[in-house]
Length: 129
Image (spheres, rainbow, N blue to C red):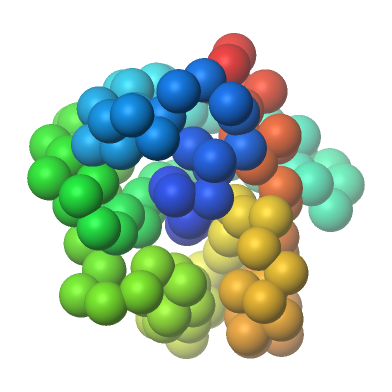
């Protein structure tokens, strides 16, 4: 499964002061992600899935993050929602099983049929945050 993460939305799901330094908060979030690659996890829609790749979509000042080994960082040229949708679509078009992590209802509504969705709590739990 390819996991596409709406980083701004996941950061915003926890009131831990992320707004004071968005780039640092994004770096903290990304740091734990490489350990999830290759791991079998409970899929939000049921069953289990192996995370083959994590794609983190960043926007604004968070685009300054350094991608940790094992995580592909996509820097949104404009809004992160459109980049998240198009990135998920690119992977879905290859036949990959895609899961987008976001709580944004507008973004969710724009995803192609067949793209699974999980809220930030799913990823936060996997990361132990």
